[in-house]
Length: 160
Image: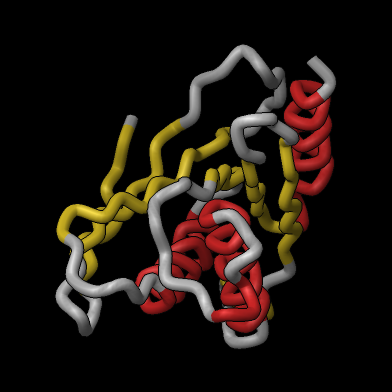
């Protein structure tokens, strides 16, 4: 099952397709749906990705408002404009940190079913000689046990 949530165009004219797809894997054995969050740039105009990541963060809140699930977000390696103070970060690490920061900023504004959104977010770094990988898991607080179980399964892959 794949459900495209949004096609988004930035003020610079870059276009993105944002989708949530049911994640099928034998890595985890949890009893809750896990959705893979994909942000795909379909047309590039300029170097600013902040606007797209902000929009993505808002969509995550809306998606979690309607579902008891875990969202799995894998930051990609595509080029991204970084400030001078962040040039030492890989594109993937920078994108992961920016997404997490934007998500944190929005949490105080988010409301789910009339109440403040209480959520869990875990970002995991998987070491790789070819470039580290950054995975963020997000869920409502009620799915905390399942989120921690999935995070542990991902961390155990780092040991292999």
